[in-house]
Length: 169
Image (cartoon, rainbow, N blue to C red; front, side, top):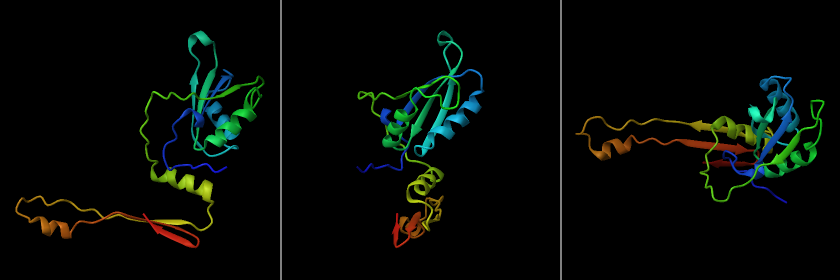
């Protein structure tokens, strides 16, 4: 089965894991590193965020982990739920819930995240990108005819090349 992974910020419960019953011993930063190490074995992660439990829940932490791929998130949930991953007690891992009433706008990834995603799924086997950026400032004087500044209108052009294929975006 093929899964399309868009070059967009992952949204939806099928790509998000909730991990709880994390020990209160290590710092949040140490837990974040440990969680990243464990869950990145299942696929490329968008984010790992660690939060302290609410006062009524007792000491400890919980985490929200976002994958780019729903399939990777499902595999990680099945493999890690009720396991002692990096601490002496087991953790609980659940997929996030999807709220159908809430509409989310799709946000594009920044350039470095796009490159990270392409390297992960395509491998770094010779693909390259070249960005040509030219700037044009609109005329400041009201007396400049539109045709004169249209001649100076410059474009931003992106070229992505894979071995054997080359496309301009």
